[in-house]
Length: 143
Image (cartoon, rainbow, N blue to C red):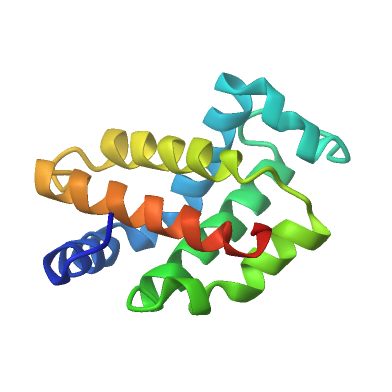
């Protein structure tokens, strides 16, 4: 599933509207992931507090959305644009790439809740395709 020029335009437009809230989106999405998919907590066992709104969750949520911002800026070549992040997750952090899909879904849910007006059916489809492409790009170094 590739991103069309229209999809890219819609994603960039939606990102322009929601990026000011990226840190909150990231913290909420990560909190949701840790609550709904408790198996993902294994990657964060070294954190002193995994509860929603905790400092580590907020900090990592900000980092995650920084990666999403990078992906938006590299939307025309996600695989090469996210190569460093892919290598980090594959070789250093050893994250199961299935978790990228889980977190992507949580990001979609949070954006849909926080930005219902902006989250049109067209935006939903484009952002979903974008997050799938982002997940695939992050999985690149696992092959």
